[in-house]
Image: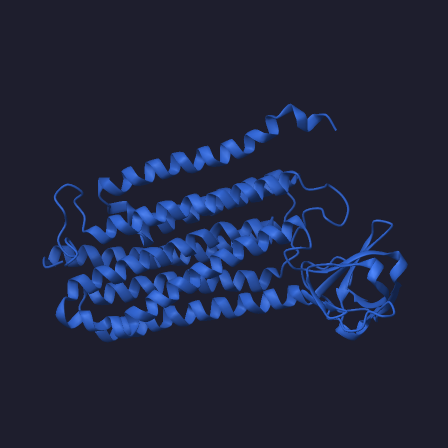
Amino acid sequence: MSDTHDLEHFKKNVKACIVVFALLMVLTLVTVLISFHDFGHPHYNIAIALVIATVKALMVAAYFMHLNAEKRTIFRILYFTGAFAAVLIFVTLWCFADPIRFIH
Amino acid sequence: MDIPYTVLPRKDTGLWNAKVGIWLFLASEVMLFGALFSTYILLRVNSPETGALKWPHHLLNVPIGTFNTGVLIFSSITVILAWASLVLKNLKAFKWWMGITILCGLAFLGIKSREYYQKFTHYGVFLRDGTVITGHMKNEDVKLKEGEVTRYISNLQVVNGVVNAGPMKGSEIEHVMIAPDAPAGHGHEAAEHKAEKIEGKDIARIASYGPWYSPYFAIYFTLTGLHAIHVFGGMVVNTFMWGPGTKMYFTNPQRFTNRVEVAGLFWHFVDLVWIFLFPVLYLL
């Protein structure tokens, strides 16, 4: 951060974080409000709320955790994490394909 | 032995070591919470579609949960401002912002404890005909059968001097008095009716809204409890940075700044987990 240019860039990033903070607050309120709205089937409510939550999480990761300007090493770690977490959830859900479930 | 690469980046990773370390740790945290989220999905998909144990909607207090979400998001921006103050070499501002971050953590845990307390003092009386009456009871509202002397009907019961955790069976009870909840509020514990008497022979079990109440409450307490432990852990680290840890600023300011950045990354992760917990447990 010795460079003046770097410092300006840094200050800009902090300002972006404050905008992200305001957006997160707004999206939280939106999530709450639409949870009282009937979209026809609970599945739609769940899908919409989870999409908003994912957007919020990505905003936190990109700006607050500054992944938008991070080194490749960290992304390599995170690619594996994402893949394994997806497998973890998929393997668990696989139990619904078990035919024993339909006997009783 | 000195830890290498606390300030300067390693050639092969391009990063100072603590940065790689915290991300590896957060990766393992993703797997931990991922496992519990898949547990949530499994419990929810398999929960009964009717009856007392069906998955509740808006059961928790939404305004309080929303407020607490705001507190946590706010603390995420204050921890950034604390770190940014250090980068700009303003120690005084760092102390202020970090202090506010710690207070926000404290507020979050305080509000969460209050929510827990309200659940542990709220009961469901499961009747033999399958219906359930929910409401508030006090210890003296439960009359046990003869010979069963002392009892507390909250999460801990003492029956004949033996301590039992968890729900109580109807066969141990002569009758209870319960002040039922008003029907169908939007998650609020609205105005109560006056106490009703229920005979022990009609009761299958009584349980407070603890983890033993239903699959929903089991996963609710597991997820929010684990999250609260993380908030607490983050607060311990932040308090160290705010207090005795600050010493390092005068000998090695860049290393101290990096430490605060890493503590901040953990704090943001805790916020990120809550971003999913809040809709999943309070709203859907």
